[in-house]
Image 1 (spheres, protein in one colour):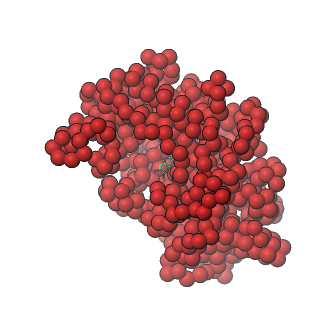
Image 2 (cartoon, helix red, strand yellow; image 1 turned 120 degrees about the vertical axis):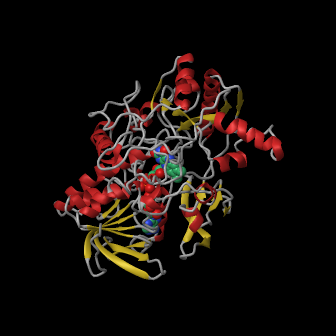
Image 3 (cartoon, helix red, strand yellow; image 1 turned 135 degrees about the vertical axis):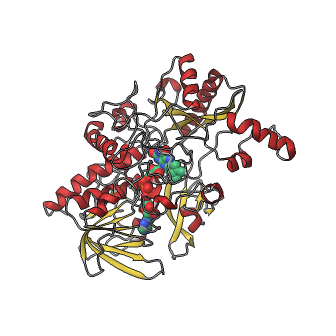
Amino acid sequence: MTQRTYSESDVVDFVIVGSGASGGVLAKELSIAGFNIVVMEQGPWQPPSQFSHDELATIQQGKMLNTTIDPIQTFRKTEKETAKVSSGRGLTYRRGVGGSSVHFTANFWRLRPIDFHERSVWGSIPNSGFADWPISYEELEPYYTKVDWEIGVSGAPGPFDAPRSKPYPVPPLPLKSSGALLEKAATAMGLHAQVAPMAILSQPYDGRSACKSCGHCMSYGCEFGAKSSTLVSVIPKAIATGRCEIRVESTVMRVDVDKTGRCTGVVYRDAKGEEHKQRARAVVLAANGAETARLLLMSKSPQFPHGLANSSGKVGKYIMFNGGGGTVGRFAHPLNEYKGHVVSRIIHDFYDADPKRGFYGGGGIDARFPSGPLSFALGGLPKDLPTWGSGFTQSLHDYYPNTLSISGHTTSLAVETNSVSLDPDHVDRLGRPVLRLTYTDHPDDMKSKAWFQAKTRELMEAAGAEKIWNSPIRESNGSVHLLGTARMGNDPSESVIDKHHRAHDVPNLFICDGSSLVTSTRGQPTMTIQALAFRAADHIAKFAREHAV
Ligand SMILES: Cc1cc2nc3c(=O)[nH]c(=O)nc-3n(C[C@H](O)[C@H](O)[C@H](O)COP(=O)(O)OP(=O)(O)OC[C@H]3O[C@@H](n4cnc5c(N)ncnc54)[C@H](O)[C@@H]3O)c2cc1C
């Protein structure tokens, strides 16, 4: 399908920066609503037929990731330190049309009503910026349902789920060995294993095929189009309107404003590094919780000397990841977990934070085997086994098909000093200051990780594993869940956007992606990021029709 293209002399209705989980939804909704759109995407447009199962290129070399093209980020634990070049992968996402929705694992959990007003229930938590959302679950529910039906989600209701206005559009994916063992363990411990909601089709839907159980979901693109990325679900519909252009290999460097402080468009570099400007009546940032913050901080002007939309000083602050703690086990019989979708059953009995635990923190638990053969050989075996020779190959043979992990996915508290900012000492290949992460886990987050790891060990024992091992609980120094850096709120001195995703400081600037979240979710934030995008698009379209942008 050929897409409509615009020239630089055109003033389009909206420029959207980023074509990922949120940007794809916004592009579809705003173009169907009748607006002219240019979506700026820094990465390429890879059709599903180009996705491969090459573990070396995809996992070890991270060919689709930001951290391969721009390898330098910096990290420090506190604001007093000078950040050093990160040793790990840092703030990681996929560059390209569809963003990280292309290679994500597709666990797709809704929030529950409690998530939106937990601060009121718990009170303040020392050394945190724990806050209520300015919206409720009830306001977001119709949009969660819209995500289910427009993106394509498989599942079945569980005992602890929030109310839903419509059933899932497609039934659950098949039960896997890991799911059967999690059910067995849950029953033995008086807990409840429930079907895992997944953004993967269990049967043909909306012109797309069902999952073929190839086993290459996590970190891979789906060549069958069964994973419900924005690349295959909503972006084709945006293009079909004839009003939306996705401009690839175009990295936005700054958002421009006029003397009155209104956005006039974005300045970007094309694949050759040449600078251009796309003019627009309004700008929507959907570049994720790391890049949206960098872009705002880089968009300094006399009107906004501390960065665009940053009169509160909160841009880039309160970055949240999700924690986790897990246990690995080997079973007597093969499980062959490397096949199929990653997760088929989850446990949400511990979702709510519970004062009896002595700290704030809740989460979900799943069972999975997150390793291809190469990654497993490079670090998946327990440490007491041989690392070379025939003993090593025999161990790989004995362990690879028989192993699974049970993992916690936990909350992360918003802490003001945890931030993404512009590194003063390093620039990337385009001359942008590199992402600097300042991060120390809140003590309650560390306690959550340890508590959930202990639970996963109990579950592994109840599931009947014959050998059990754990990795030590670690402090975070990066993540693939990039949340909270332009948070939503009613108070302009405490937040960056209002409850309709409009920047408090700039009437024609909207921000809607992982950066909008006020609390961290219990892992799996993308369902909420996309529900927010559907909701934001409704409000933005209404404001535009009323000439109120
Ligand atoms: C391996 C992996 C597994 C994951 N599994 C899950 C899971 O199971 N469940 C879950 O809920 N979440 C999961 N996630 C997280 C999930 O992918 C993200 O939460 C989600 O994609 C974030 O959506 P977003 O719209 O905020 O940003 P993204 O999807 O990251 O999209 C941002 C887009 O903006 C583009 N961009 C950035 N800066 C610029 C710029 N300056 N100019 C132009 N374009 C730009 C990027 O290239 C990208 O395409 C996973 C992530 C990874 C990496």
